[in-house]
Length: 130
Image (cartoon, rainbow, N blue to C red; front, side):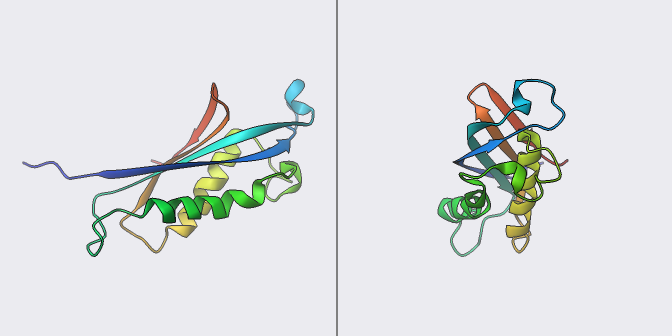
């Protein structure tokens, strides 16, 4: 009984933004900013038969940057959907995951493993779906 292959790719990028956490009752309710680090990991069990890779790293990074570029150097609380929901790292990770899912929808052999958003090297939020 053989094992089924699984391929995984990960890219990272970053953006800088300000935000305020609503109803936090602490320092983070005040206006402050972060240099957010974002990672996206995708996976699949098949390679593109023509080129023999899951997805070009360059393409994956371009997809990620298309999603996070509008978040760079803005006040996140004014950007939908964060004008209504808290711009927490968890909600940012879910937002990026869902937007990435849309971009990958035509490639049914690829799934997203997770998206992580780090406010610092010691504080990281992950979003994944099982």
